[in-house]
Image (cartoon, rainbow, N blue to C red; front, side, top):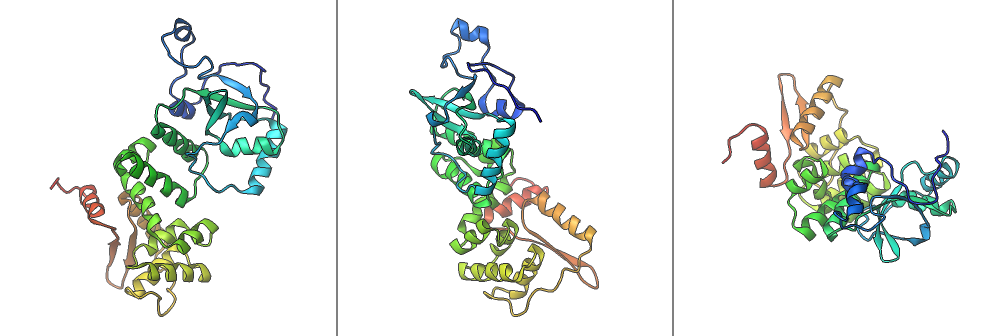
Length: 307
């Protein structure tokens, strides 16, 4: 891989589709010259700027950064250059970061004198700033489930956006947004287990089916200690019958590979936790819902007429 060369002064280049969706189309040079675009002179430009002039984005949804991964990224940037510029907006004589905090941290860690940055027009509102930060992180780097849930919740609570509106803005399904936000209702210990990697978001969604936080915390702790799969955790919850701790560990799933693929397909289509059981004669499909809103959504997804 060759090092990217960058001119010292401002220069323009075509934006990738993802960045153009985030920033809006680059302003036309002729229009800018004629004054039809009321933007800063460097808006939409690719610049090399001093990383010390870039201030943090208070709307950044990501809160955890892996030190080893940052060190590896810093070394890659040192050897090969920054392949994806950060995104900033003007803030007086300085800049405010819109997207690319991991890359900016890596540039600083590597001691590089400049960082490639696209300067976008200043956000017209706090909502735009938060949406831009969230969208860029979802497109370019995986947020933890809790960080993603917190960002969705902030969009809903602070700006009054419905789950459907958030889903439309971010290319998600409404049930996916709702189910992710529900993770914030879990006990702190369960959320920490997710952040630490002791359980997955799938485990966490499974324990949401339990009736109280004591039961949820106990089940998540046992799943982590026993190394259960999501399917085993779901079976344990069924076996517990509402008790905070199952009497016996879950038995291995009896589903074949095709059955498990079918179960996951149904779950993804409905956007809700699904359990598929086989018995000597037939079986059953169990669909878990959180509230009346989820139940109404399920009814419509199954083709029911509007009530």
